[in-house]
Amino acid sequence: MLRMSTLFLRTLREDPADAEVPSHKLMVRGGYVRRAAPGVYSWMPLGKMVLDNVAAVIREEMDRIGGQEVLLPALLPREYYDASGRWTEYGDSIFRLKDRKGADYLLGPTHEELFTLLVKGEYSSYKDFPVILYQIQEKFRDEARPRAGVLRGREFHMKDSYSFDLDDEGLERSYELHRQAYIRAFDRLGLRYVIVSAMSGAMGGSASEEFLAETPTGEDTFVRSTESDYAANVEAVRTPAPPALPIEGQPEAQVHHTPNTPTIETLVDFFNAAGLGRTFTAADTLKNVLVKTRAPGAADWEVMGIGVPGDREVDMKRLEAVLHPAEVALLDEADFAANPFLVKGYVGPNALLHNKLRYLVDPRVVEGSAWITGADKADHHVMNLVCGRDFVPDGTIEAAEVREGDPSPDGKGTLYTARGIEIGHIFQLGRKFANAFELDALGPDGKPRRVTMGSYGIGVSRVVAAIVEQSHDDKGIIWPREVAPADVHVVGTGKGEQIEVALRIAGELEERGVRVLVDDRKGVSPGVKFTDAELLGVPTALIVGKGLDQGVVELRDRATGERAEIPLETAVERVA
Ligand code: ATP
Ligand code: MG
Ligand code: MG
Ligand code: MG
Image (cartoon, rainbow, N blue to C red):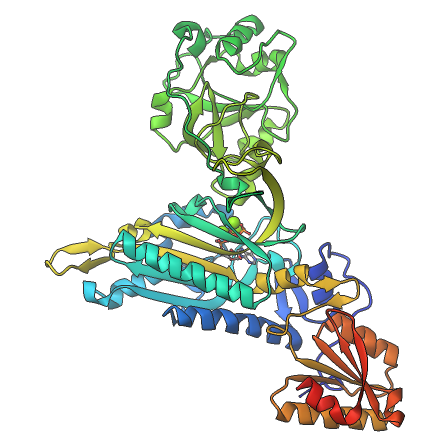
């Protein structure tokens, strides 16, 4: 029995100053979490219970699909991440540290490397496979913008699992098992969510889907069809294939190059000939155009974006000045054969800022422009580097280009956009990590077969906040029963008798297996107790108050707000 008189809990009347979204405000006010550093939180007793309840549901569903739980270290030596290339790839987003001998370590942001090595160490025959391993553990990522309390932490709890199979069909099976486990877990947790196609991003895999909890405060935007099952993260909208290059009927010489040291006039000619969908004049501006440039005498071309999103457009005069004396050309097939490559520079008012960033370019180019895909979330706002023309490349396209009311890619219905929180992510990784660590299984024919992998994550701590985002009102949290810290909140008002009766009822409920939080505080007004009960969000409240003289207690339903007076003798029976 949880007794409020001794519980390590202080609720707050005011929203914390740094909180913007409801879950952050309510979890802090309700004493569920306390901030220790930016993006780093302590879980208080009630918070820890909720977190454990969420983890328990996920654990049960992972066990149901045959997952085996392990616990790997969070402190990892650099060598594994060197082998996979991710020591470099991760850039600023991992926490790195040195031991007393000067050796490099990191705090694990996700664990593909170590899991691959673990399986390599134990398993060697085709008879050992398939296997699914998982853990529930703290992860560390030095997020650029930790926000919204535990929604985007720098230390957070993740369930991460990894599947190991001998062939593609096996991988698809393991992926489907995870998909079903996620559906069951998120349904049990009472979440409203969509499953959307996702870009595989820095992981380098192929098939990948995200589970997004629908809420206006979510950081991800997805599109969804009104009539079909089509739903996709805007990072990953698939559309028909582009026309082949080179584009027919365009005068080769003029289209592909400016002279060295272009003038405004030759630039205008160049852009007009490039067929960017509009006619330019010397007074015109450009935005979202991708070209390559080469200084006189230089051997290599550099890719340059002109007028990146978020910037103002760039006028011809400025372009002339910036490009002087370089030659400008359209990107051609050879450039894109070298995909992925980096865009080296941007022209625009904030060019200096953008020069620090690096973007991968999708191979599908149409008439001198390309869709840009970001290797990282932070890049997505500049992914929309595309000329103002209405073409549809086969690639990764960005929100602004997928408008509400557009037909959907599968020909059924129209698209609308909505926002969500990424609560889970499933990936068919393929052989990227198996290749890096040479993870093979000896086949029945005695020949080695390279293992294929999947990786699957759920943000356990993020899920807690996502539930609150979807389930609260202006008074507080409304927990679904499965995750609530208690089933019933028994409130005894007054000083003596009511509190004693409340404690007796609580005891009887507990004997019947009901989880009880009892407000047995003395010298605290009924109003404060009711306010706390609503803030804390336990599904049912049982008030032992003034009505006790007439032998009645009050039952309150947190979700519906319904209240009913019931005879004291029937209370335990009613609630249990
Ligand atoms: P996001 O796009 O929100 O940054 P991600 O795609 O980087 O997430 P994954 O690498 O797919 O995250 O990790 C698996 C899961 O871990 C995510 O689906 C999400 O639920 C959770 N997660 C990721 N980053 C955080 C974080 N900073 N705080 C809390 N949960 C997180
Ligand atoms: Mg991320
Ligand atoms: Mg993501
Ligand atoms: Mg993800």
